[in-house]
Length: 97
View 1 (cartoon, rainbow, N blue to C red):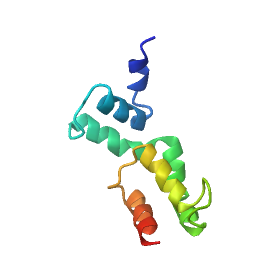
View 2 (cartoon, rainbow, N blue to C red):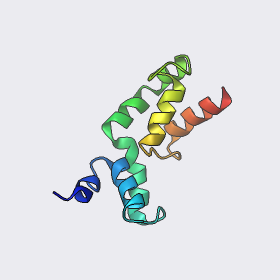
View 3 (cartoon, rainbow, N blue to C red):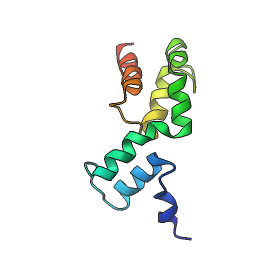
View 4 (cartoon, helix red, strand yellow):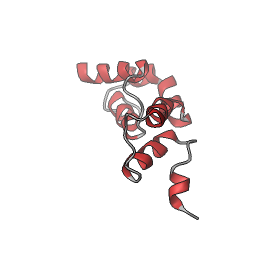
């Protein structure tokens, strides 16, 4: 099995985004890459975290795996688009505390 085909499957758009950028040297400004980046917030683990964003911001910021800082790190690793209003809200919260 060709691992690159598996990495480029768009069901995990963050993985597909990174694989396209790092392995195929696709420009982040391309239409496809922009679309992948926007869809990162729909990936089920990311969507669940965004659904519980208020809880993360209410928890102590450094609470492991649940606090705002950990949530932001996870979202960044999953390539969640910082232009998304919920991701931006969390980033602003982290920067202000």
